[in-house]
Amino acid sequence: MTAAPAEAQEIQLTGPLAGAPAVRKLRLHREGRFEVAPGASFTLLDEYRRTIMPGLRLTYHLTDWIGIGAWGGYGFQYNAGLTDELQRVAIDSRNCADRPFTKACQLTRVNLTRGQLTEDQLAQIQWVAAPQVTVVPFRGKLALFAELFVDTDVNFFAGVAAIGVKERKQCTTDCVNTFGLESRMAFAPTFGLGLNFYPSDFIGFGAEWRALPFEWNTSGFDNHGAGTDEAFPDNKVDDKDREFHFTSMVTVSLSVQFPTAIKTTE
Amino acid sequence: MNQARVGLLVAAALVAVPLTASAQPNEQPKEINLDEPETPAEGTEPAEGPAVPAEGDEEAGLGDICKIDPTACPTIDLDKEAAKELRPETYAVQQIYALRYHRFEVNPYFGLTMNDQFVGHNGPGLAVNWYLTNVLAIGVNGNWYAGLNTPSDFNFQTSRAARIGEPITEYQWNANANFTYVPAYGKFAGFSDFIFHYDFFVLGGVGAISTRPMAVVDPDNRTFDWKPKLAFHVGGGIRIFFNRWFAAMAEVSDYIFFDELENPSVDKDRLQDKSTWLADEKSFTNNVQAQVGFSVFLPFSWEYRLPK
Image (spheres, rainbow over the protein chains, first blue to last red):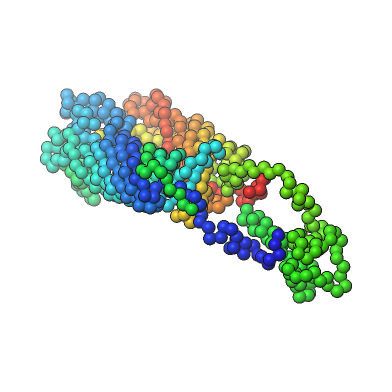
């Protein structure tokens, strides 16, 4: 109720919040800290083999918004429903080992093993190691049931991943008798985003989505190599049979920050 | 709400600083400088009401208000008011930025198939919710799939390579009645510069989905009719508010139902007999889809019940 002339806009410009930062007393969960985050990843949208990958993420945060580090894990597989159905219908029921003369067995002898699909031809991700850069553009807080409040942030990351893949052995001749898996290493870009929660000064947890787009032959089939655009089988199992998959996974992790003491802004 | 806030600021400015008086038409606006001594204009008498405080009085400003508009003159006893006991209760979140209470949410979105490798069931959808409380809503949603079902290359290649016919179905429409619950909300500072609000929601409901098999085993003889089935709906997602009535949203929803599949075997004596076309067992199906769209909350603005 002062007598000075004033306008609404002036109040905004010269009020007590003028020039103030968006957030005061911001807890710097990342700046100058080393983060160790064990977790588990679960692949999404798998065709034949699903992967659960225990892993570890190590990150040093140069500032509160950027960090450098690496993520990696080792994969364990289990079957998708389609794999069990293929095994039952196309292999076990046909019994091509004893009835190789049937039409179905003749037409599928390059593509289907007479043993176990998982051991002879279906590909799997064995391990992944990925150096990556992490950017944290969004910081905030979350109210859960209007009772619990935790610091949160959203991070984006990108890097290059080395992927250990097991695929069906390549063959250019006698592919009818060439089944079994062999290992190779593939390289792929990796990127994604995560949502992190910090219930204490040095312990957090979070979930992230990660993409690993690369070409691999998940089925072990001979699908490509002959005809227009190489869109028809050529009775060989080779690089041409690899297809682009936007391989993705969800990771849940627990994170510990060192040093455990936390800094805050003014 | 911005209008309300600006309105309050303007009102405060008008009350505190009566620079111009619009009740003086066709004259040069008279500036009132509250720091100057009171010199009543010639031929004017002080208005009725509380006496104008003397110069230098702490309540000079109040006195001027009384002078301009006696009806707006504050009558509070400041000493008495100051002696009152304070209730310094504060809330962690003083006022929720985007209040949902008693508002409609209109949410158009586009759904993308997440778990069907053989046929894509992508299509548009619409959800409408009414918030009974700030965290609980009832509503309906629907999806349209007809004409948009797309058998995948994977389906073709698997069938060709393994010589199997995988039973596939296409969807026509889906509709559900839902409850939505918002257990968590918060805000983010973007690049330490701007702030935006978000919330998480979960939902569950019941409805129907219309589907039919796509003839794969005996397409020469079999054609199937659309048939609605009971469906259940569970899901969850996030909304990011751009202002108090407009938000981007992303959701994962699972529409659960028992589907009818094509019979993988053919009765060669009864090829045209419809009763032989469907498999005996129904298939427990999860149609999981990612839904991306935006939400509009109506009405656009509201008044908070309690001050900030």
